[in-house]
Each structure stands twice: as structure tokens, then as C-alpha cells.
Image (cartoon, rainbow, N blue to C red; front, side):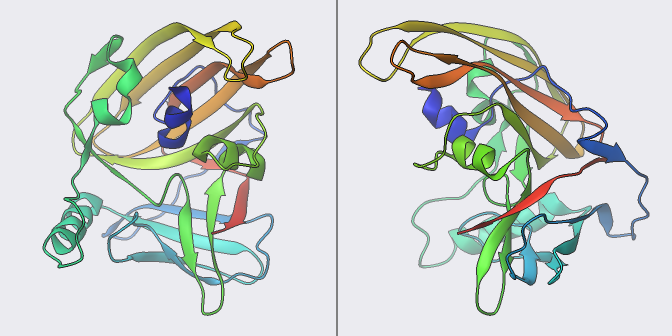
Length: 256
């Protein structure tokens, strides 16, 4: 049940990173730009190219460039909702459309929070990038860049087979058409998926106050628990939003 949530990750709260993990800086923007992201990828692996701010299935929209030294600049537009809507319309009217693309609602994005204090459940959301990552399209090679505590952590969250459970965090950007909020904790009992039939307790904390427009969301795995035969899984996690001026410090590159 929770493996699918890890992949979709509209889970759970309580943590904020320390000043070593992020910094706040004002940024000048143009009349069409809402937010500028600038940093340097720790492991660029020689990949350079345009940075796509759109998700899967739609035509790319390049909002920046990754340079050979790993430095990059991404501009997120003020009208991302209109950009997304046009991209969905173009896909939905194309002969290759396998199904209809549409905005996610807040409730669809955070389904396990339904029983918590949750305002604006039907608010529509647009997500930047592909599963918490920005695609980089180069002439010879492509990859993804993303802000997270480690490469393994991101792989674990999106369900990569060889990833190991670990505590850590990642950040991602969403565009909300209206404000919404989620606050509270969800406590559940779950079975380890290793044949031991052991039960473990899990707590997922939410502390989201989302504004209309762009928002920076953090997801953190705070604690792990272990079965008698050594299977590790999440016992505490958190979803929270940061100030939009927060600049995540650590960015990584992963291949497709």
C-alpha cells in the first residue's frame, strides 16, 4: 500500500532542514518569470543540455540549461497553469493519446490525508518536472536533476529496484490554481512485506499551507524500523512546504 505512495509521494510531514541544507536569497525575476532556480549539480557526469520543466507525455518546455561544469539556471513561468493546460489539450487531441491528461486535485495528490484537517481538496495542481526531477535533454545523453539529500534517497522514493531504505529528504515544485492546506498526523499499523507477519507502526505527518501559484514542497523520511530478519521500512515521514525563497543546496544528476 505504501510502496505506491512512495512512488507518487504525496505523503507526509514534520521536518525542516537546517541552514546547512538550504539558504534563502531574494531573486530578481522578469515580467514572465515567477521563480529562478540556480545551483550546481554535484555529479553532472558530463551531461549538458536544455532543462525541461514539463512532465511526461506532453511536449517539452525548456526553462533553463545545464552547463558542462554542473551549473544551471531554471526559470519557472508565472503562467505555468496556462502552459500546462495547453500541453494537456495538445496531447489529448493528438492521435497518439492513450488516455486523457488532466490536472491532479489536491486530494488525488495526497490521498491518505483525506481524514485529516484538509481544506481545498478539489484544488487543481500542476507539477514541475517528472517525478520530482527536471529532465535534461542533451545531444548525446540525457538525465534528470533534482534537489535531495542523496541519489539513493530519490531512487528509493520513486521505487527503483536496487535502492536501499534510508532517512533523508527531497524537494519538489507544484503550481496550485487556488490555496489549500493539510495538517495532522496519520498513524497506521502495517505488515512487513518479508513473510515474517510482523506488525510495525507508521506515522505520516502533514503540515502544508499551499498558496495560489508556485510552492516548494519537502518530503522527509524521518525514521526507519526493522523486522526480525533485517527488512527495513519507513516508520515516520513528513510532508511540509517551505518558503518559496528557500534554495535547496544539494542537487544531483541521475541517468534515465
